[in-house]
Amino acid sequence: MATNSADLSSKKWEQSLGTISRPSFETETLFANPNAFRDNKRYLDCDLNRQFVPADLANPALANYEQSRAKAINLQLGPKGDARTDLVIDLHNTTSNMGPTLILLKNDAFNTQLAAYVAERMDNAVILFEDHCSMEEHYFLCSIAEQGIIIEVGPQSQSVVRQDVLEWMETMTLHILDFVELYNNGDVPPLPDTVSAYRYVETLKLPEDENGERIGMVHKNVQDADFKPLIKGDPIYTLFDGTEILWQGDYEAYPHFINEAAYYDNNLAMSLGKKVDIQVIK
Image: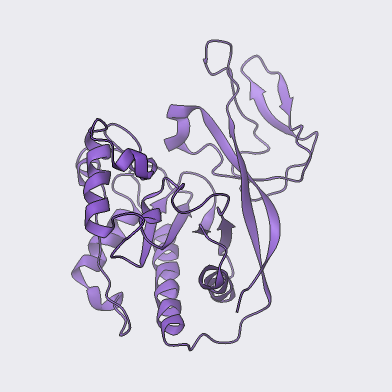
């Protein structure tokens, strides 16, 4: 997204690398999509953060701006599968009401300890595990590295800057960097045995007709209720004719990325997860 907290944080830290540097590792900053920022858009041709599957990175026919940019970033930070970069922290904003959310792609000692460390230091932090596939299969930019993390903070409208969102993003990032320093030195403080989190299950689309045209919207009771439970029989959509569509899933779901503006191109309504206690691997 253009002119937002992620962009501002990146530019700010470019000018003050001492803030994000630690003795045990080197830190670099990368402004991932400068042309979209210039044009005040999330992207020009396609979502940059969906272009990092190895087959796509190796396909020269995929050559629009974001696809070409992904290949350049992969060369700079990667290559994926044998990256020179150990950890990528990817900063994002969302229009959804998710607060400061830490998204982790692996369930291992590093990630589970990081989740517990951040949760203890940020009362409002949300921990979300998207460990349903391997790093190779993930299409996110941060999956280039052996360890990849996404910080997703909202709500923030596209092209708008909010002080609370910017502060949450910077606070979470600095906690992560502090943890990496402790982890590298074998100085991680005592942590609980488990950490409360959410685990991604599936993504839902907005209601469509047989021609793929959108015929409804997210129900008002669900809108802005990220990480609030959704049980079978709860209304989830309202069609434009007023008909309510009820959730028929067989589990207690926790919606997130609800009505994210950037996902409208694909008619995506929200992601669903389950609430879980993650074992902290020590």
